[in-house]
Structures are given as structure tokens and as C-alpha cells.
Length: 281
Length: 319
Image (cartoon, rainbow over all chains, first blue to last red; front, top):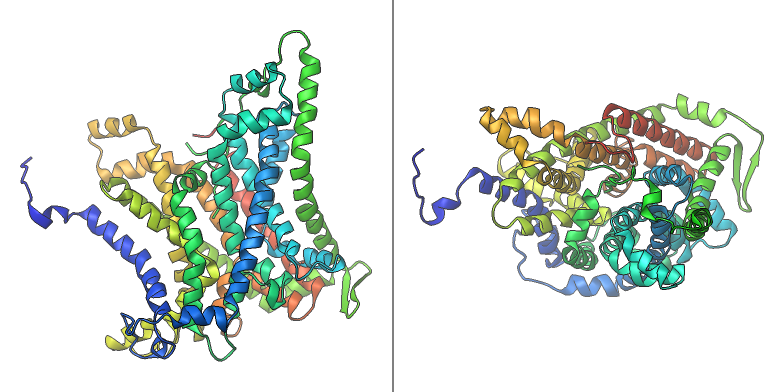
């Protein structure tokens, strides 16, 4: 085979790079459109043909999202609900994952399969009974109205991930603890937990993403403005006639930043979670 | 190798070996500890999911009246189900949901596999591409919907501007039934293809290299190798990706709710949108529960069928 040395930018022209570029374009263009449009003035966002580069660059939408559309409230609510639910999931999930992964319990396998089934159950099937239950408890329009179902819905997947990580920890480690006479909880805390940290990150980032983006339950259970989360708040911006895209996109950019940073930092764990088998979108 | 668990067959006794002397006592103690540790999580999950599922089934079989004081249930009836099955809206929603699921999952699977094959050959910048792929995955679906609503906007959206520039007129994507369905599928494909690509890429990376060497020595073409070596080896990975995607697509709610509110007419009304509207717009909790229960049943059947078809045994080694 003739080995022709290509020089300059020509050596970057090959099938793989061109295809990669096309993929990046396919994913990147709508993202660019979202970010660019968030800087358009409310007038310029509705011109035809559209402005491909916002001119002038305006920050007024970002201010307006908070001042005119209560985005601050939604952001706070999303943060509270997501953080508490994620903490609960990780606490309960680590204990259960440890038990189901490492302790000799009878009948734990059917339990794990049942958990898997629950984790893929369509939300719509549970909305009505949960709504009625929350109404009885006078818990509609509250943080717990979302924290409780979010915790329950994300626990099964977290338990699976954590259990799989727990299985990989060498058994000698906890035996050392047992011989030293440490209590079971102490063994989990000081010996198992540090080893299972990658699993905890993975479960955590999945739970955070799921809670941050959840829409159907947030829409049905919390109808009052002061308890709406970001997805519900953003979907209800504006009136039936006017969709204030400029403010929506400003809010969208702010809503995407925290999760974007988290996913970027923990991308190794996200990918390992996606590929540990229990795949969930 | 992508199975739900790779170590399930390991005898549990080996995981925690009881010290010599009093093995039985210790084992029992550890088992009790196990239930103690897992009980909070299991009870929590059961209380918030299994109980409501059963309640939902009960509700779907009774006459439900919603009044100011709450809901009242009387008698036992199959009326909710027969009303659902005989309703043309439900039948349409079922057909639409199945069509939507089949098309989006197929396209995402093919595109995702192609992207994964490309990225596997990428020498520089793969990490950055992975980071880019993760953004749509982590994005709020409602926000994804708003971006596409702006793109499809009939008077100042970028799509109609492009169409106009090349002389194809003004499409009102979300205002016309078939384009609305296609437009929604595109939004879904944009958000979820990267997710499929990541899973497939991870599966590709884990494939054993010697098989490829053997294929190369045998003089197999690239296409032949892909079709007869790569694809069969990837099957467990693809099967699980497909299963979870199918289940997720079947619950389609956020996109139609924001993009079209089920319209124009009922052309993008999915089963979940129909169930939601029955319950929270028409306050027909019995009918809504019947829609929800049938959806859940279909999901369960689909889940079992796909598990069988792909011969994936949950929790068992399968490579």
C-alpha cells in the first residue's frame, strides 16, 4: 500500500472526522439555537427571517425570567426537592444495596427483579392513586408531595447500581472490620462506603438528573405557583396566546448549567452507570 | 458484556464467609441484618409504588364519582374498561403511541449505533464528544420541547425561514397532524440518540479484540465483520437499551404536552396524555385509571416479550 503523507489541514479530512463533525453539528445546532436565542431581545426573538447571531446581545431576558416569571422560586423548589430526594435515595439505597449485594439473605433475587420492574413502570399508572393519597394527607402543594415519590421511584435503580458496586468489593475488607469488633453500621460507614464511592456518585448523578427533569408528577401534585419546579414553571411561562421564548430560553440556560456541570464533572460515573447494565434514560 | 448483574451467580455464601465454629448462627445473624438494612428502602418503595398500582386497578374496576368532598367509589364494574376499549380516541392513542415508540426507537438504535461506530474510530477528542453527547441526555424534556417549538414556530421559526429560502413555502409543522408527529419524533430522536450512542460505544469498547483479528485473517470485509461479528456480540447491550427505550417511549407525555397539547385535534395524543386528560381535565378518575392500567399492562407484556425475544435473562450471565 502506498503511504502518501498528507500535510496541513488535509490530514484531518477523513470519513471519521467528517462524520464526527456532522454528529457534533446535529447535537450542537439546537443547543446553539437555545443559547443564542436566550440573548436576543424580546422583539428580535420574533423577527422573520430569524437572527442567526443575536444583535444586540441582551441580558434582559435573564433578569426578566426572575423578575417577571418567578424563575427564582422554581429554581429554589427544584433544588430543595432534588437535593433532599437524592440524599434520601443514597442513604436508603446504600444500606439496601449493601444488604442485597453482600449479606446472605434468602429471597433477595426475586426482590431485585421486582425492583427492576418497578423502576421501569410508567408514571402515568401511579398518578391518580398518588394524587388521591396526597390529597387525603393534605400534602398536595408541598415539597414532600414530590420528595416522597421521587425517592421511591429512583430507589430501585440506585439499589441496583449500588449493589453491583458492592459485589465488587473484596470480602477481606469487611472481615477485618468484623474481627476488630466494629458494629455492622460502623463497618458499612468506614469500610464499605469509601470503596463504594464510585457507585454512590453514579447513583447520585442519575437520581439528581431524574428529579431535576421530572415533569408529570410535579405538574399534577403541585399546582400552586410557590411549589412549582423548573420544568412545570417553564412550561407554564406566558399565556395561551404568547409564548415568551426569550425568557423561557434564559431560564432554560440557567436550569441546564447546574446539571451540565455535574454531568461534566461526573461523566465517567454517568457512563459507567449507563453501561453497568441497568440502563435507564 | 452487559448484563444486569455479572456476579449474580456467585454463591452468596462465598461473599460473606462465616468464620469457623458457629457458621449457622452467624449466617442467620447476617441475614437478619440484611433485612434490617434493606427494609426501610423496600418498604418505602412498596408503599409508594405497589400500593398505588393495586389501588389504581381497584379504581379502574369501580364507579368513581369526583365531587367537592373528594372521590366516591361504588359497585364493581367493567364499564370503565369497555368505555376505554370502545373509544376511538383511545384506539387512536394506542396506535399513535405504538407507532411513535417503534419509529423513534428504531431510528435511535440505528443512528446511535452508527454514531458509536464512528466515535470508536475517533482518535482525538473523544472525551469532548462524550461530554457533548451527555448534554441532551441530561436536559429537561420540557426545555427540549420549547427549543423545538421555537424552531417549528410557523411565522418566525428557523425551519419555515429555511423552507421559504429554498422555495418550499411556510410549513406549520405543529399545526398539521402528520408533520406534528414527525416533528415530535425529531425532537425525541435529538434528545435520545446520544444516549443510545453512549451505551453502544461502551459495549463496542468492551468487545474482545481477538475476534476481530480472526475475522481480519479470514479476509472478512468490514460490512461482513460488522454484521456477523460485532452485531451478535452487541446483542445483550442493544437488547437492554431497546427495552428501556421502549418502556420510556411508551410513557410519552412531556413532549406532546408542551409541543402540541395532544393536537392538532387528537393527532399527537399519547396514552399518557389521554390518561392525564381523562383524570385531571374531565375528572374521570375511573376512566383515567382504566387507561393507565391498560398502559401498564401493555408495558409489562412488551417487557416480557422483548426479554424473551432477545433471550436476555435478567440477572443471569449472558454473553
